[in-house]
Image 1 (cartoon, rainbow, N blue to C red):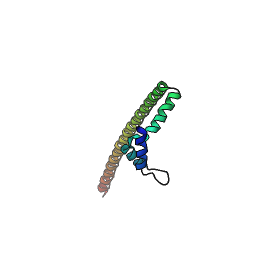
Image 2 (cartoon, one colour; image 1 turned 120 degrees about the vertical axis):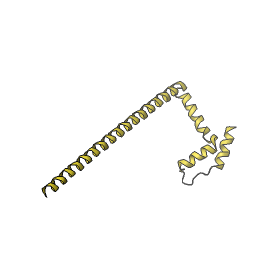
Image 3 (cartoon, helix red, strand yellow; image 1 turned 60 degrees about the vertical axis):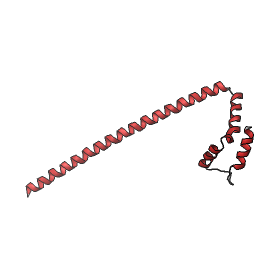
Image 4 (cartoon, rainbow, N blue to C red; image 1 turned 30 degrees about the vertical axis):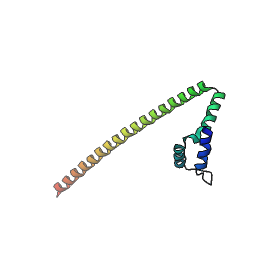
Length: 115
């Protein structure tokens, strides 16, 4: 029975004294004892059945996934624009540097002519 797995896993998991567990430890314990979170998922599923129903939650999660994907796409577009701007700034700075070097060379030649 799954509850037996959970009880056995709880005995094997080293719970921290202060009550807080680092995420990497939590993650590794969940991989070692996959049945550990079963009661939480069971409670979640029961609540979804009683509050709004499975269909509503499926639609909600679908909308959430869509919104998350749209945000990720926007973030990627913003990053691409920043990359383009960075390249443009670099090109302009290189052009300015080259112009400055040309002006320096022109002034240098003028000084030599005066002597």
